[in-house]
Image (cartoon, rainbow, N blue to C red; front, side, top):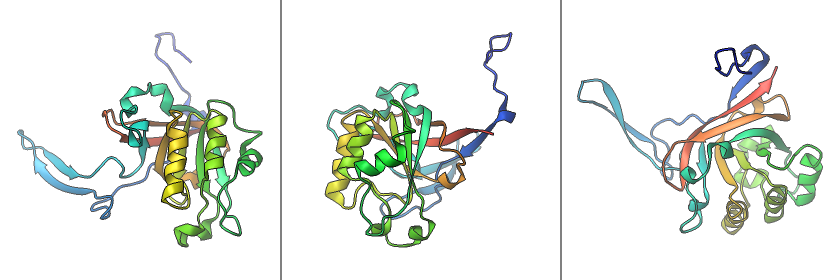
Length: 222
């Protein structure tokens, strides 16, 4: 609530901050490099040269990632990247089947409201050390369910796939991004969340690009 001097004030003793960002360390990988070299500025203070790209670490993907002339991250208002969020915690199916629309309805139907942010978590710890084919995944019908329920933003942890193969990955991206639902990939530490509903924000680096790095934070009531 505003204080008498007009400054917005929060009693942080009532809330808990959870960092959901993935820590990026050099050198990264061949596909997602993160190469750093320390140098000096004109005043002899230290700086780093960095060679990487926009899909390294926790990042927000905008429609320009898939569509020529699509909106970049700077074409969205800041409110697009924060708000009420719900946790979609998905157990691994015995046959490694992807998440269906019926699964989404069962897991989120009574919880999700239009305009919510949805964060998807692999709820099965042993599967995280297994091949990626054993991880839970979205399918076209579950992506369509999220779009039809007016998800504001959809994020995924490091053990959750956006489709079982490249064609399905592209289909899931197409369904969500075509509705201007940005995606957040490489979320981490979702196991630290203790509540199914919370406040979330991931403000992207202000660059007119298809994707931009962000610091993802959840705010839970104590």
